[in-house]
Image (cartoon, rainbow, N blue to C red; front, side, top):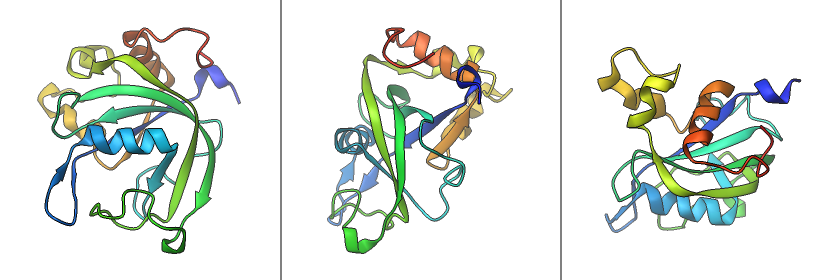
Amino acid sequence: MNVSASPFFVFVASDIEDQNGHLISGAEVWDRRFQRGIWPLYRRTPNSKVLKAADRVLFYVGGTGSVRQSFVGEGVIEAIVDWNHMKGEVDAENWMTTSATSAVVLGDRRRFPTPVMVKPLLDKLACAPANRSRWGVLFHGGVRKFSHADGAVIRRAAKTAADTLPD
């Protein structure tokens, strides 16, 4: 496979609630998953069946908070493992999420020095809808597939060092 033309998968972190009804920001959800190096996949997560080791990932934070609507980092999939409740929850035990059916083990993780807002990039992204006011559909579902070219636009915007991950 031609690595330079490989797509990027965008892992989306959104706001969730805990068992007490408190809002957990998408940024906090992303940060916990990023630090642990484990990302949950659920029964109906889009693209979960096509993910594989060595796929490249960009992280996007939706929801509320200071870094919402931004790309915040990148990584590479090391493995995808089956997961069940006997292993515990992927996320914090008190977060109101469905139990994961599998989990992505992440490697070569890197935070972007500054979050990259998505709105200024819309005219450069081939995947952006023609009706730019509907751009949020790009991030529905938890895991989205972006072309190599769109991933490169985002990485350039983040001023990622060329030697951090393969081009």
